[in-house]
Length: 496
Image 1 (cartoon, rainbow, N blue to C red):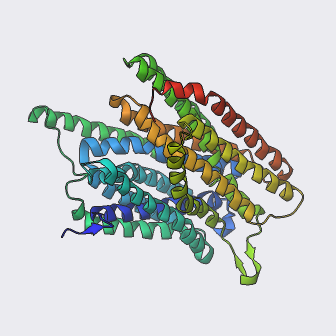
Image 2: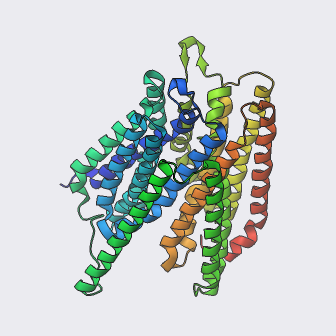
Image 3: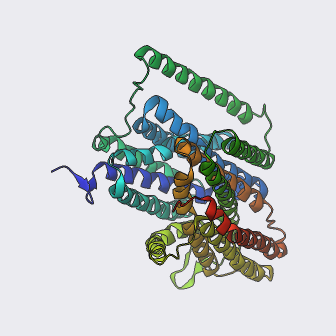
């Protein structure tokens, strides 16, 4: 009898563990990044101001999502998903090792770039291999992705706990070292067990054209990759050695405008030039609304690793007196994954139960609910900030409640958005529309970093008002989405 994993192909265990350790590394390292950048030089940090540190954090997160686009292309056209995952895992390990050992900021920032490349190669392609294990598709594929999703959240839960404690026990850079070690474990198990994947994710040269034509096309693609990589390396070297001066805040703003411009141009092309049917064009309008909702949701949600992380570090009473233990600030970054593991089955059941009663909200309505839940989380933070403004630290339950509300918002929006982008897109544009989803998430991360940079540690009295501005904007946007959800639903043309 062939080896199985909870009744699924044994290869799913390989991918489960690979993605678990990748998410462990990603979220563990990310939970430390801003705290390290603003940390005092005497304690091993870089001593940056909040605005610069959060801009770097936002650029890093945005780049990770954007890198998934060329990462998927490299796997599809050149090396196959299995090799891309292997190369990506090695790059993530190397990048975190650079964060842990580089004596200069230059080496540290190069480490961030190497991690971006690694995640771009690994993240989209490990999911593609999961799909390749189930050529028949259907319910078994959905079940397989559910197990895979559990691995994602187990890794995201454990990462900040382990790296945060390592930082407390062994110093500012020890958490990055722990991330490198566990990613190396993930790469090793992938290498040793990849035989269970069979042909899933193995590169298959295109056979439609003649052999010579296909070989020539592939050579051209390799040349394009190497030229692009060489240009990127030269630019990185010029920035690293100060030949091209870079202000992270200015760069974050500029890239925000660039991404907005890209989105506008793409949707103009999609809606007016792409030769769609009338029904496909109407559905395209729905995707534009969802794109905007997604970007604005993540502009608040992704405060988690920046402004909320700094709030945990500076203004939260993290001492558990009877245990004589101080909760590491990074541990709060595990709350989102813990709540997803706890409540995702409940939400999945709830949507099915509502659908049976013809009460299931439409996709735009779920987006509206998600955005308003995110805004309500910042209402909690505004109350907490009012206590801080009067000179007291707050207890951890304020952050716990905020993350709980944000997670509820994510469960309303993120899985629904991914599903509807595939359902609403014209068949020949499904892959591109998934890229647009990544683009919206990337945009949200950048905007989040710019918002976080406006919080001034020397002006605590302004914090409640700043959080309330996020509340007004989020709840107002959610209300608008809810109002227009009914006419927008009509544009969906019966897509459920």
